[in-house]
Length: 79
Image (cartoon, rainbow, N blue to C red):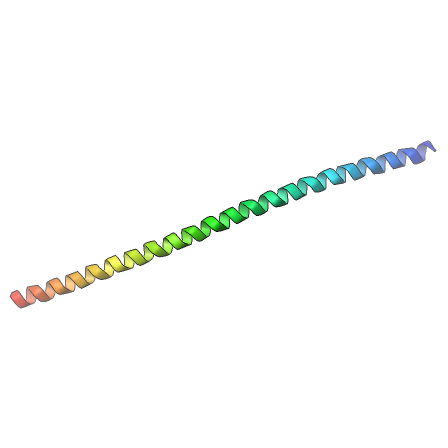
């Protein structure tokens, strides 16, 4: 009978350890999902900002080129 009780006790201890480990893994999973969600949202924001900066730079260069072309035309006409 002692051996049977010992085995039952060991099984219970093993089950408790597994439950504890499962709880830890679930907490890790949820925290990881939250962190990844935050990271992806920040990346999306950065991509939108990057698009805006790229478009602004393109329009700035384009307006500069147009200004230079008009300046050259004016210089050629008056020169």
